[in-house]
Length: 190
Image 1 (cartoon, helix red, strand yellow):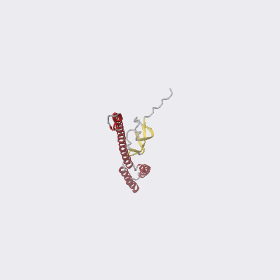
Image 2 (cartoon, helix red, strand yellow; image 1 turned 180 degrees about the horizontal axis):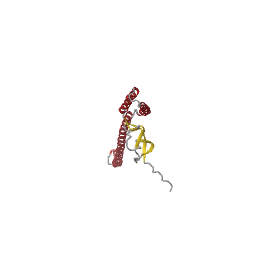
Image 3 (cartoon, helix red, strand yellow; image 1 turned 90 degrees about the vertical axis):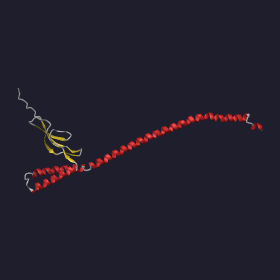
Image 4 (cartoon, one colour; image 1 turned 120 degrees about the horizontal axis):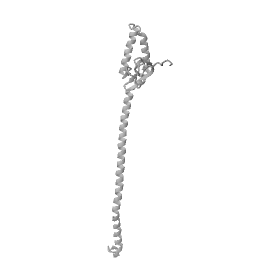
């Protein structure tokens, strides 16, 4: 029995050897413990990158939504103005007919309404497309060409329908007649 209690006996030495064995494995556990730590750092970096991208996407979405909302407010009347332009065209034709007697009360009343319409259009941000000078396909719609004795090709000769833009958007191009160089008359038979 004393051999069992004696620390110099073989069974106790075996226990001691067993106790030493786990301590030699401890450094291996520490190196494997570093791998999960590195994995956690990599995972944290990945999620940080995702959160930064999401924040940037949200900021871009906020800016785009704000811009779209401002444009919707800015151009809210565009459809109404597009529908109003033919009415204005017809009114101007009536003004031309009434212009025969500029002293008549009808003409004076129509002229006052025309001025109010023009002031309304200006207050809504509507501008008339300029029609003087050279033809510009971005602003004008050429409905016809006429020969011009002056020999200048591509000049606006007259307007058949006024064009308008709402701020920087085209509502309707101006319909114009454009000059062209006269074709030389073909000579007689030789």
